Length: 465
Image (cartoon, rainbow, N blue to C red; front, side):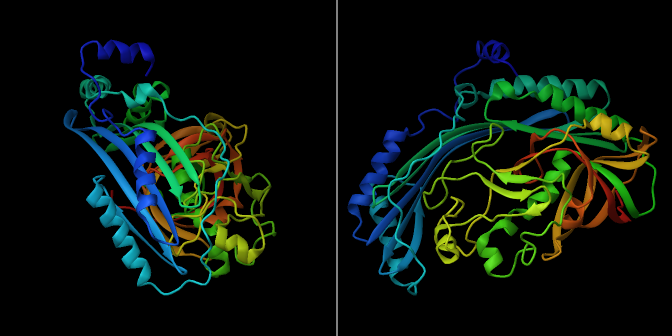
């Protein structure tokens, strides 16, 4: 979508409903300051999210639902003599603020003392990121409906049936504590997802961006429509080990399962697949991964749940897992600096990287296909579950566009497979990669990741659909 398209649509539409009258940063800070002044705890922390989300939902080639909601979450953590707890509310009146503070205090006083609990951090300096776009925040139902109606009309004319969502939203967040720390962030996000069905075929595509002007729903829908048409007559292949070409969304939904394994707490608790593997080359030399909130294709707050600035952390260097991410408590135990990946306290998970970036390659998807004697192209994976956390074996299924590649050409659609695949083995078997792109998958987990051609991927059975 471009600005001209949006402006034309708005000449006949009213203002955005979802983002009207959102509390500004000054108002959120006033509420946080009021809570901090009311508290008699040893230390007090306030995390606030205020935002609006709007969604246009369509199915059977018809827009059937438009939703819009505003939200406000005020989360208060108090500390009394090494005991801590958190309580939340969505109300801003004086009585509600006093009540949530009292609830947090009562819960904290009833907790066992935590000898590893650290004092809250003081003021910090944060990296600057700019991810708020007024065009996205001001998007109207009419904006989304104009785009969706054009797409579903095209599907209907082609004898296809489309379903999906087009959403836009904005959020403002602040984190403040009684030691003088204050952090603020605002972000917008637009997302389009579509599944197209026709006969026995189906296709899917999804994209998102902080700027609606950088979202191209028509192009995204065209990919899904093409996959649907191409998969209408699917043949069946026997299960076994095949070379696969994973499109970015398929790779993301698989490799996202590795994120918690880079947690220093997980390694200390002996529940990471990187226990006894750090510093050893276990992947291919073409595998490099890092976490970077400032990457231009990433989203998210530049500070963690404790208020520490998120640092760029190299995780895998040319096949060797090198580093972990650390909360303040995990860093103190390890004698290192925190990396800014802690979660809201209290929690049992510790920390996790949330801005993963893979180094890509130079092979386009078309070149990977052309260079494959025999392979299976996978558009999407879903219903993924972890089978073995230490060997990182996951199971799941392909869907919405699974194709045979023979002698560098499409050999037709094939029935979907169930797989049982070690992610450690997968990253040791990557033959080629495309450029890294911003991608989003089944659970809206975002990552910067390339398409990958992987040898010896293990399919265990053909699915019934």
